[in-house]
Image (cartoon, rainbow, N blue to C red):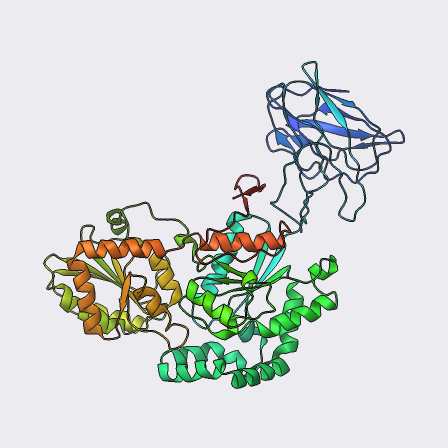
Length: 582
């Protein structure tokens, strides 16, 4: 048969929405006001299309996957008997050019995917249950020349529903949720419409008292390092740790299990040291009972992955040998994992997952960034941050910096970010600084990547996230305090890395930073060291490794060596969701 397709508009059609059983080949086309109306025929009956194809918008619900393409007249010839099922068409563009074999998955109101996979040749399509859906084995005649232009529209190799990712955290500090958000955002960017992520503070929302009080307890302990040290040792000592785990299993196991079962995850990702033991046990039982999507598909166990968010050291609770994969950000944390019995084959080392603003290097100059932020453009700039709560004695540090920087030969600038601590912000705003030191006081900011890009160095508490972000921006780092335990290792990580110092005395902090500002060559060397230590691609790498497991592109990845270049894994090319090699 011949399709008289308009050479200016032309259409490319896939019959994804037709669920008719056709016992013979053949279809016809007729012009409509908006494009082409189609009829699919069989010896017994003719089934008209309920929806014409719009020439400018492509197919609507009656035809899935239509595209507008310039073309000439096209003739289709059936070269084999038709098998009942979903018909297919060749893709013609510009006379003799044929787009071979593009697979398009069906879509409905509750299913979607971005992982269309390109292939060529004959397709053996199924309806998802292993049943053959058939298809035309067509020959296209373009300007009198016969070309093979078979296309299967039955589906792709991956499941067509979004993969459900459950990220478990506790909001004890902002870093765990920030890391979970970063992983979610990386999935959305690298694999659009492929993953659905749910972030759950499982202790606050699904535990029993007193374990629901982890977050307020953390805030109290963080302001009292001595109490925090006791809490840290209690959780690390084997006997007390065992006792605590038994107690939480007895009281929280059922609620945690119901949370995981309700989420129906294809993978569970732990982004907190206290979300390993019970979730792994619960997931094992749910898999055994066939209550998880993975088990229901007959694919075995649901993968469980840990993403460690500490940098220079880590609590033993992070490392559960039953996890399928464990991401560590640094050599020191990798060493702790191995000492805790974590198999090296399960370890992957990329860096910390960071907010999207730190995934690429800033190409704008510091002067441009300062202008955009309303700062003085030509002054060396010191950034002082105290975390989201504005802790770390930043008022005393700001005052001491003002006293020291006034003695530096040239003027300078001080930017103080107080977070949500309005009391500290007001106190600093009421301070009097020497005219040689320009001071900008900020509250909570959502564009920390811009403030770091505008600065020459940073003063901060030893939080792993802020240190990793500062490295990506190439900032010499002055550490002002740390929590005993997991943050203690961040101090040697910075000082031995050659891009920072530590002191908890405001006067010494100020004199050290003033010395950096007074010696640009020294500052430049430290900036280079910081940038060398940065891992801006870590979030992408972590997302790709996890996606490789969930999308069944590979088995569980084998561990890489410390500092090794990540093995290329599938990524979406950002155009049509086709999976390509990185």
